[in-house]
Length: 304
Image (cartoon, rainbow, N blue to C red; front, side, top):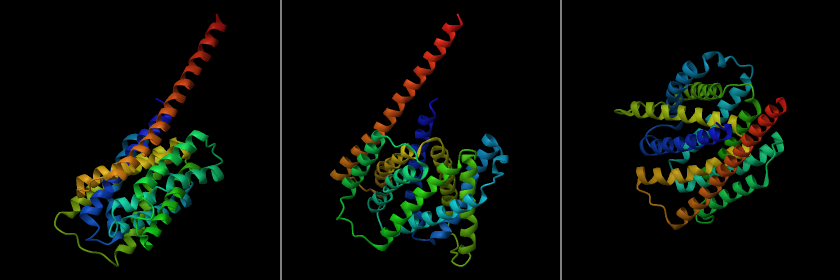
């Protein structure tokens, strides 16, 4: 199977999974518990699917790592980003939050070009820009009252881009499952230390909600880590735009929010940008496969 297609599928699944996680946190948890306590339980129970993956897929030996400082840095950055996003749920709707977070694909594409020296073809640049135009249609700049928490979200978008970039920079000889494990483990340890000062006892059956959230987060983390390792950043970045569409779906299911005209049009534009990337990669994969078959036939014919 085409590696890029697998990466695109995992990235798409991961981003949709995280929108589901955001929806559950916003509806059931964020108003009752401190941000870092929420993060503590999510990191704790995220280790369930990750441990499963370690045991049955990669083996625990992949945790032997000579890039511990990078893993710690990613864990700290991930915790800061998660705290910023969860805190924004207290005050803002998804329609305000996601458009700001969706500056990440542009930031990541720029970072990849200048830092990783990745070749960013004109078609990918156009696809990223089209997706961003779709985000602008949805968000209608000037209609959202910009607050300090929304400014922090933009900082979170930069942190998110840096975190993906670190995976791209150091993932060549590292397991994506190990990246997910260490990211959540560092978040768990730091959250546990700080949460002791602000702990709120769990209510009723909320522990089960936290378990579900943790399993969702761990599964999404595995998908995103694998996808960001498989794909060039300029190909991985636009996949995040699909979160906006998933956000509308879960927003309706959890909160009864009905998309308006601008949100529908913007979503269609975003879908076009993402589908274009997938189509182009599919065509490239077919051409690559055909070339390999022809080369093999040439070798066989020469042998005769």
